[in-house]
Length: 139
Image (cartoon, one colour):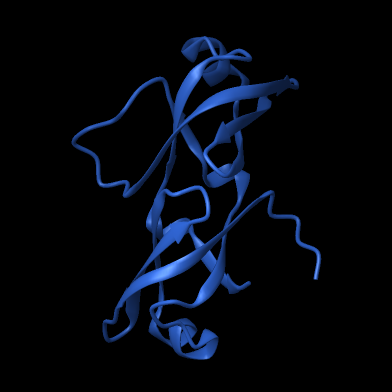
């Protein structure tokens, strides 16, 4: 199956914390980073997720925010340091590609944000992804 979701990161489930409706699933990505996904308990069951399951974390590029350094005091669980490898701008929006250990993330942000943050090829950034914006699929 082909998907329009640019960010597809392979990994292995390290823990599942169930709740009545939602569950948190911790994934060790192939690049060594830890990622948290908040998905429905039904999805955990449907996918048969347990510790050791091989998965692919899926994140739309519009759900990847960028910061110019580490961010403290924020509820966003997933923070991945990386280096900008490409910046493409249009009239209002921009696509920024970021190399992270084990792969690449694509972020769709405003052109104004690119300018204000001074983003260019070689810039060091931190990609921020809320756990509720991470989907999982069987690898």
